[in-house]
Image (tube, rainbow, N blue to C red; front, side, top):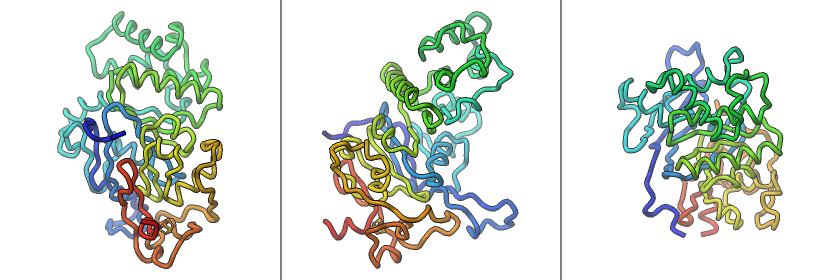
Length: 331
Ligand code: SF4
């Protein structure tokens, strides 16, 4: 199947880089800075789900926030429907805000405990539409129905809901302005396993109904693989592999880091099509990333070249890119 030809691009990044600097540094020379993203080039197609996976500190959450312009990049571009976000003025960015929403990991901290759901759900509508009074309440009731919540939830407060119900309500609020693109930042990580499946199914259903495009961020490859069309694997701020879910299921993963993530969740591959590998050490410090391939201190396949030369992303198949020196030795 040709995954990319004739598909409309909704969002793309060009050399997207983000460093965090120590607060007291007078000159931002890069010394002591933390690498969160480095030269990330990705494309998100209309109505697809692009999964982003990696361990804590890999840059996936920063990526989601930079795409939504909640954090400014250090360099590089985010282009949404052909518009470079860095070239837009405040009014244009505000208009664009309606198109791009986010659902956070922790539904308990997503709502102000003092506000009823009517107030929380209607807040974005007050800021971006002319709806008032009864019309505002009607739209809020409609949002509740869309996420499978009863209408009496409108007059209740956050502490009266379970985590799964609150995440449904967070999704309802994200839908309020009819967005086209939603960043889902670990939306199921804080929930019980049984509730996780319900939320994933709800998200898939909403995507079909409202033609949504998702960036789905998770540390859990089994969740990512289930919901995503394509998967980006990140390590210390860099993309190390990009692969379609189909190829991942077919056991075509190439990068040792992705294999290590897969090995941590064996239920992803009941047929055991992939190689199982284990990594020994913790994630290195992003302030001083290792030379060459950042993964080399943990990689069981590391060769002499791995600590000296950084591997570049290389296209292996139409739906598969990988940054690993093994590509040269196996091709
Ligand atoms: Fe391992 Fe070398 Fe590939 Fe890095 S480039 S993942 S160290 S084999």
